[in-house]
Length: 293
Image 1 (cartoon, rainbow, N blue to C red):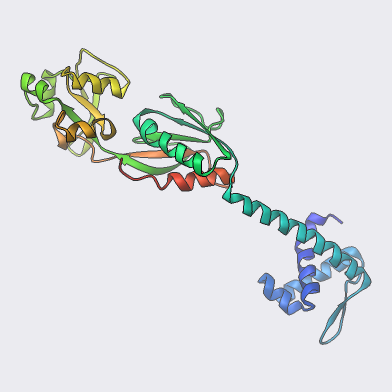
Image 2: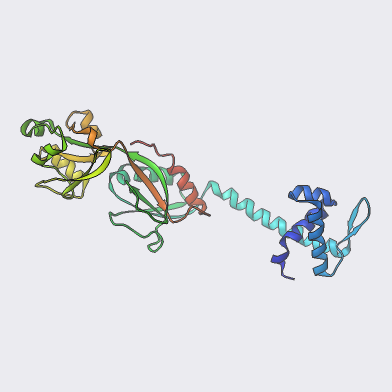
């Protein structure tokens, strides 16, 4: 007899033997008395042994039934003990997490969050890999990726964990020397700092790519910020770079109606089913990150 095929029957048998009642066993397992009787009958047929002596009011285990009940009780107790030990360990999860991320949000928000997480759960190990390239979570053995903006269609699971606002801005000195742009066409006469020859803006309620020109390019936000603060040109950067400078009036926001109200920030994973305990804890904690930073 293959035990795996008779798990339901063995569970039913153990409960009937424990309660000495088909009705109580059925109620405990949430099934009908007839279903319990059918499972016990099948078990007895397969074993070719009677397990219970039944009367109108009470049932008694046969000697073979006593032997099987003791074995089942020990086995189920061991399983329950193992389950309890696993659940108890969830307060101290253990395991490795590898995350792909990039940019200021990774540096200023995710990295500090990870430090707090590790202090709370010191048995977890986290590796942060900063990179701009698109990765394959499964093939490259990453657990999570943090990405900003519109996501391409994929089979990955995505959860928004935050959002950011972006600003077009320049120093008072730059604007004094070069004029204050009032519309997108005015940008043609300005030094627009960026990583490429285009900016994504909002025009007619749609995202539009506009061509810019500049004597300085960089894919590093801090380098662009430094150039803007040195009166080189106009920058287009997330709030985490420019907030403090806007408050101090070292930078002035321009063309606010052409920038997105907010840009979503996502955590991506290959699946959210049957995650290891340490990854479940990580997801629960990272979901508490403020929606604005």
